[in-house]
Amino acid sequence: MTGLRLDGIKTLLCLGAHSDDIEIGCGATIRKLTREQPAMAVWWIVLTATGRRRAEAKRSARAFLRDAGRSQVIIRQFRNGYFPFEGTAIKDFFERLKSRVKPDLVFTHFRDDRHQDHRLVSDLTWNTFRDHLIWEYEIPKYDGDLASPNLFVPLSRTLAKEKAETLCRFFPTQRNKHWFAADTFLALMRLRGMECCAEYAEAFYVRKIIWTP
Image (cartoon, rainbow, N blue to C red; front, top):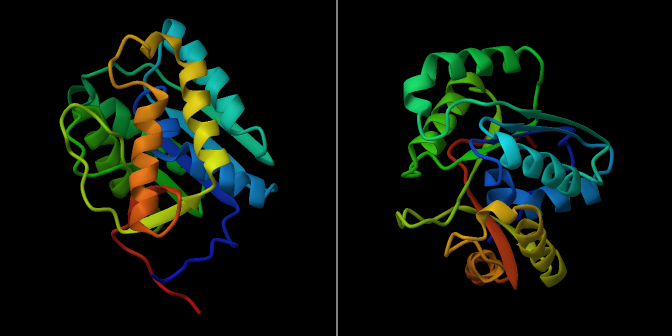
């Protein structure tokens, strides 16, 4: 298995449809990157969160970004579950975002995610940031749409547990969901760790990458 170094990542863009998506999909990787490169600037974009969910999103973003050199958290209120029908407004938001941030690495949803909001965010990411390094993260769900990722970020047991516990602490509105539990998040990270000869890992789908020696 070949390793990839990310020393040149100075600006990170994280895109999530809902208030806990970024944390579930790549929260531990963000913690690892910002710890190892404390000058990193992070743009954290949540496209729908209102009321208590909005407050949760803000508190969680602060926790996951506490080691970032600079951070910008943007939370919008597009209609949850209706993203394909609000596509024009969301596309306009992406175009404005493109003029504000020049990311070295973009985290977004898996293109084949069965949730319609997630899928639209992934499509618009590729439409908007065509010449950027994009990692698509995965979110476990009832639909059973997990696939075979091709990039892995090994994690320590401490960091994996921190991610799982932080998610459960900062999103009390989600505790009524049968799957929203620390053991779910740890189980997926343990599985991905097994696939890359590590104890824990987060995994991503990378469709295009150019090697520059």
